[in-house]
Image (cartoon, rainbow, N blue to C red; front, side, top):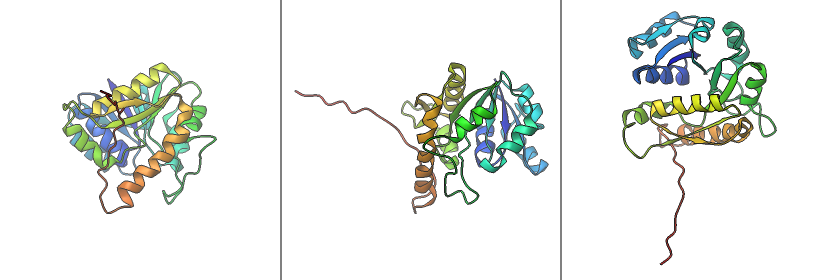
Length: 217
């Protein structure tokens, strides 16, 4: 599978490297420094390359949108027409200090991105897990008990794409339902960020949902 990465910060860079190490073809794009793109390609291995956002989108089966909320419009303008493309966004609509949501409760960043891309299929995933845990989850991806990662989407193909990317890293996907559920998963991302960066326990947090079954004898 060919994955185009729009944004090479903590989320896009780490996920792109792991997607490539999982055997996918990855195209990194959108960085202020070409040297950063080259470094990611080197770390990712022979299935990775770098290009412009438009090149990453044109070649991709799945596009990962992974930029700060303030850069969404700019990267989408550089990416060009995404009609018919499947887009998985891990963007959280945060302010400049990364401390408050600028969209929430009656709308979501994921829904706004879908409205900006009316011809694309959009899913939301990865926002609720700190990037520092990705490598650890990937390292134990063959174990039967896995950490979860939430996703939501309206389109079935976008949902399958998000599940594919989540599984490639080593998470077990949890389908939270339609895209408007991002109104609740995006605030949950602030909770996981508080656990990761606002406590003394460190950033390597993951979560797992489970059902309790009580046996009455």
